[in-house]
Amino acid sequence: MKVMRPLPPADLEYILARSENLWQELSGERLFITGGTGFFGVWLLEAITAANSRLNARVDVSILSRSPERFVALHPHLAASCTWIKGDIRNFDFPQGEFGHIIHAATSTDARFNAEKPGEALDTILGGTHRVLEFAARAKTHNLLFTSSGAVYGAQPPSLSSIPEDYSGGPDITDADSVYAEGKRLAELQLAIASNDSGLQGKIARCFAFVGPHLPLDWHFAIGNFMRDAMAHKEIVIRGDGRPQRSYLHAADLTIWLFTILLRGQNMRPYNVGSDEACSIADLAQRVARLSGQPGKVRILTPEDSSPAPRYVPNTTRARDELGLNETIPLDDSIARTLSWLKANT
Image 1 (tube, helix red, strand yellow):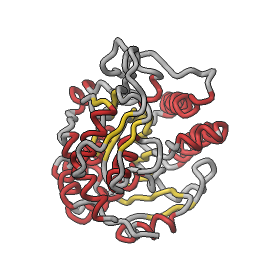
Image 2: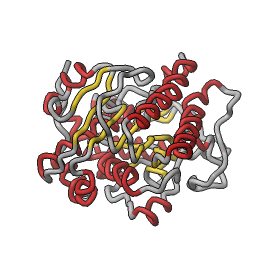
Image 3: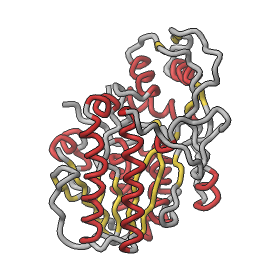
């Protein structure tokens, strides 16, 4: 098992410089995180560790994981940064004491698992959220941030260049492939019921697509697959026609957005989290190839369709206007920084 390098110091300095007021507010607080060993979780833990060390934030963080031992083996520099709680999200034992804040980020974004075991995937989302809400009531939690997904909107209509939070569409509930999206929708409803019943402040981050160190390279994320092939000096192959539009927010910006929504977001008012800079899959592949030093090594297998290109791009006006959040790392810079970190880990 290969030990992973820490995040680039520049990324951590970037986060701390733009979130110092948040760490002052979290100082001395207890924070419980589910999904703390995934892509989101490792960034959150790295940021907390850096804030505790450099800003004397004194955030007491506990992380739920089915396999803390594996995470610690991969990230030994983070081993002493938190209290580890071993268990399944659906039935974990509650840690003792009060926790003022919870970040509930545990879910499976693995498309293969969701497709092969949709019932288990749905149970993990709903059963896990139910258990976390039970724990929140026991722990007298004030703020609970739920990392939802842009998938809750269903397919983006061609008439919308970007999806706002008040768009009322949804996934096809007669299709088992909608299990992840519908599970996230129902989990938001679970949070709304708990907030209404108990006064818990429910914060919702509807997350789209991201790029940065620790992004899985062998899942269904196009940008991760492209980077994997570029790092192996292989041709980047696009199996579709390359026209679908996506957008990618750097994980350093993502981290700032999540902590801001946790502390500043309005109760049960969803915020889209992502970049509003649309980029076609073909253009994305070309950017990865160019920035990896292999321009032109892209092949598109399918001729262009004449129908409107599918889009998955958030409207982030609400986050900008209400919370002062902005994307400040351009896509090319995000790709270059991620590739540099990946090369250092090979």
